[in-house]
Length: 580
Image (tube, rainbow, N blue to C red; front, side, top):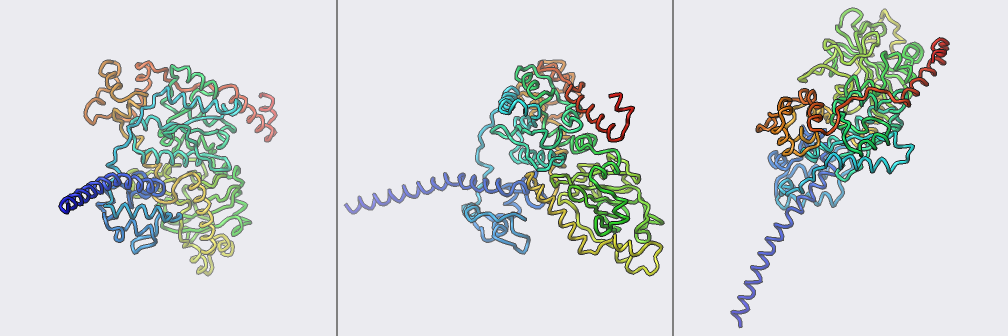
């Protein structure tokens, strides 16, 4: 009896040991998935692969372990965990500038580290269902018909479906969603930040209402986008035909990656924002009278600072802040040299500049940009002898994208050097009193800059973006401009990779378009080569007709005539008025 009891106890112990081992094994993936969910909700916009602070820390399992941010089994010496609790000797509490994680989320990360920090990337992910072009069209059509008949003509869509089908990482897709929201709202004259709305479970199709961004006013901004879009196809689908009729346009959707890469730069950047040809016209629109402010309102409606070191300016630089209709209107004066009237320390009021950059608040609080010559004509890019992206592979400053990359914290801080020189000048050749009124005290200028930074921060966070760090849009533009592999090329024409490669092998026209290389290991095609052959490819595949909209519909013509008529009335131009 006694020996039987001992044997029974031994069996129970073995069973308990066996079950605890398997229970721990089963719990490990759950623990790692739970911690990844916390990272996904609070950390990846900054520290994902395409995050704004990925250069500081990338939350990939291998990286966290290798750089010893996480010490498996030892949360109390793991820097990642300690920074969630508060500031440490190596940095500030995380998430930076945001509310701390709640107690349960911090406890989840602690338990994960205690459990040995198991790899969430090792957990098999569900295989993605390939989304066909027809399924995408059906999703868009279902959404369009959920709108009132009146609202449908203002509905437009951006798609990431091809990237999802090509196997883009969740991190990459998240970055594209955030970048799309930031860019659309940075091209808006609407009063509010309004994020594009996902309409499918996978969040690859996004709806906007043109009226929210004032893209329907004066000239049809979407028509400008249609004209620039190189991947437009009149698809052989009744759903597509109906969709075009319902939205009253030829291309109701465009790819978000193309839009981000193209609309962040001139000419489309200028066209969507409707930026005029001269800074004077822009100032009129924003109700900024530069000459009047400088003459009669220094320290009231305009403030100025000057310095001889800047992140982009090669020589001296003066910056000037004016009050505008929507917040601030910043104007820089940049120089090709530093002698004579280009010396801002001896000529603080009557200097001769060679060009400039304008940064102004849009109605929603985000910033727009404008590069100009010395006489105020709009530029696509700045002369490199005046301003440049120091240290960049491409040093040319291009309006829009380059400026966004530099101003991820809104306005940049600076240290005025001119006022102290003015104060020490005994008998200057300029009006010293006026100069002191214009070149404000340090505390006053700093207060204004803080105000503008706060306005921008509120707007960028409302758009779902990250304040500070590097600009994800720049990374995504570079990605889009890179070569395409077979998976991405196939997805862009709406096919699975195997099917596309088979069609290439069977069709001499596709082979003559230079696509055989996609069947080679690590074979790619350059973006410009692919774009030049895209129309031929979709035609050979018999998916539809490649086209660019060339007509302007009646509604747009009427709007343009009305605008012309209003302008003629305002200018009392009888000849133009009678001709309409």
